[in-house]
Image (cartoon, rainbow over all chains, first blue to last red):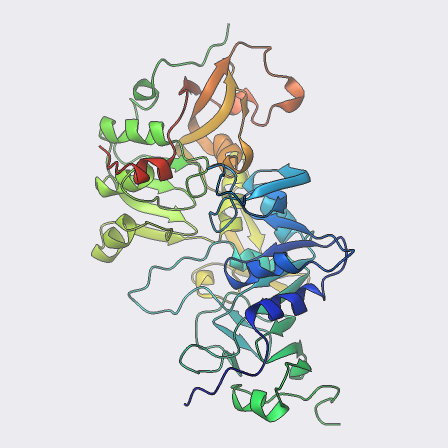
Length: 224
Length: 236
């Protein structure tokens, strides 16, 4: 498969800004390690989001700018962070009661594959020599009210990440609500993936060509 | 008079036998009871089962315990961390077995174990490879897995403040698994940077009540894994 030019579509920062625009004021949000962390930089004017980190902090603030930091104030990625005014610390069982109990409004996660039925694979390639590590991903997708995936549309090798059925080990079944890629915003619907918005300079055929399953164009319903 | 203090980390872990199960608090380096782990290395117990979220970094703390080939099984959610090289080698060699548990299920299994709940159903992990071998039952239209409570012979945890009765307060995100592990250890050992007289801690602020704690050791200025690693320390 040829790797096409990436001059079209959104940058990672633009993806983060686009996603942040869809988060309601006052939402409790858990941002996964890596690319989802960018979302915190783009809180829209006039809105406040409260960030949860599963290792025991609500009201997480940014990493300290001057490089100072507290070894005992970290995020799930084990990076130094800060606690905003109004923050709270709690133990792990309470933290996952927030997650599993449906108290968090949104979980943003990266993905290796997302399937048209909302299945997510993001923790293991399943290769026999890999050290399996799952962390809190399975709990997040099982319990948080909405699950958004933020990912490049294709792998570095140009393979589609949006597929008919996941081939990697699952994180959860039918759990993803919406996918934000560099090419498009795509909803998971009972009929499959449906385009919500195309990135700048991106046409439907281009996204379709880089997707491993049939897409439904924006505004259309399958079979009508 | 109740006084759960012991004079040293060495004495606090002196009776851990070969084959013991040991819960070790911490998420990454935050909350890792480094001095208690090093005392356990010096003490020599082997064939241990360790229950902890991660598997340590560098060659200090939990990673050093693994490197000394004392641990034949780990129950954890994320055995990969920056600078984590010891566990992958032991795992690939087949020396240390891994029971991989989703992080929230791990916390809840420990909470349940400490609370006298033998098992519970959770939707986490249903339909994934981690559901293999587990009973599945549907509740409210969704499949759930039967997960068993976890207890351990010992729990080693780190607090910021404690008192003679074993009441404990923690520091920021170093709290993580410690309060649930304190409930699930048959012998719970706390290292705290300061141990105060009874009455010095406001009862309204106590996080772990002393009934869950058996031994308290004062370790002022406890070490942090990342600082030891930066200083080139390899324990022992």
